[in-house]
Length: 124
Image (cartoon, rainbow, N blue to C red):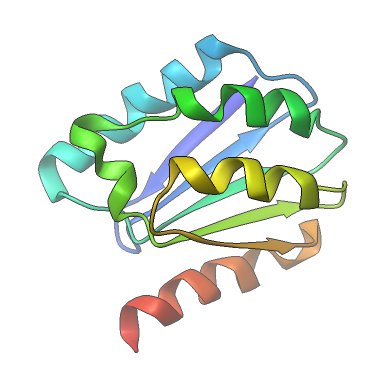
């Protein structure tokens, strides 16, 4: 299951996942993010939050499906993985699908730090 929210004031998409993730979840994410991208043209960043244990290998396998309208994923410069599980292996597997992205991992309790890191790139 995947919950998707776009904070329009910050232009940050938040994807929150449970333990399992399916292709349909990422397709649903695109249906939420695409309309925003069509209106605004870009996202400042993407936060992928997995509060509990998540199968990061499965996520990395599905990551190529996380493609947004008109290859807008190329304009995302920062992706934060927010989790208490080991996400270090997945970062390298996600990166090629987001050509210009820097990826950083934060503990689950530091969600706000992830948001601040993304916005620091915007305001500096």
